[in-house]
Image 1 (cartoon, one colour):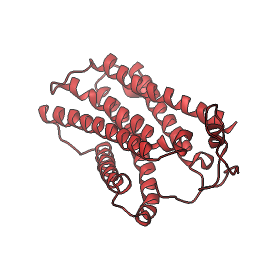
Image 2 (cartoon, one colour):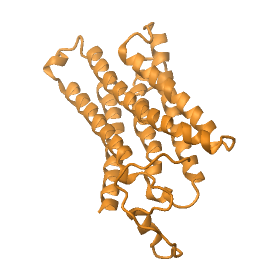
Image 3 (cartoon, helix red, strand yellow):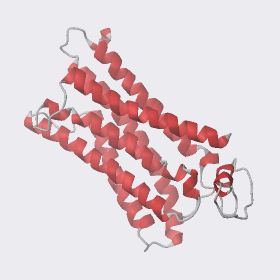
Image 4 (cartoon, helix red, strand yellow):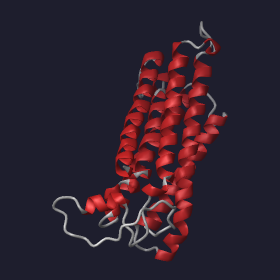
Length: 263
């Protein structure tokens, strides 16, 4: 039952993530003229799409790599590389999103980094850069001792979830700010809920639901890596799959939070 619920949650997560990106793209295409990398407002339209794709969807995918039951068996190195690579893709998309908004602002003579949304966003990106660099140097490169990794892992986990939460807050504030600007002089103001406002608000709610589901999966104790020597239901099913060599296991349900273990 736990296995089925996990994969159902992952399927819902994939669907919601795709919907977040598609809804944001449709919003920019239908109400703001589409996309062009030319310094005009069409270039700005890349900003929300790239930030949602990078800081929300790809970031969450990287964070959830270690929740896959397949990552609990065999070498951890491929999963470490996948974790770092997905985060790197998320960071590249995020940087492109920042380039889009800064270039448009500079071309249009608009001030940068004055709103709460921009402060939240740039803080999130800065923390993300520090988190990725420290994680790469400590957990992927072989120089760090097991004691240092054990010491830094809870900090790494805490900031990983915190950065994701800040990213959700940045996206929501950005959607609201964009609506206030785009509907300020419109025939139907924001308060009358024109079609764009309804669609963008719905997109924001999708991002919130997506974020809550990601945080739920990250915090669910039964879906975390168990203690050494304890096998959960998902590991047992993997080890008993057809063609797998017999592996002696100690089966215990894991219903409590496990202590931190070095990567």
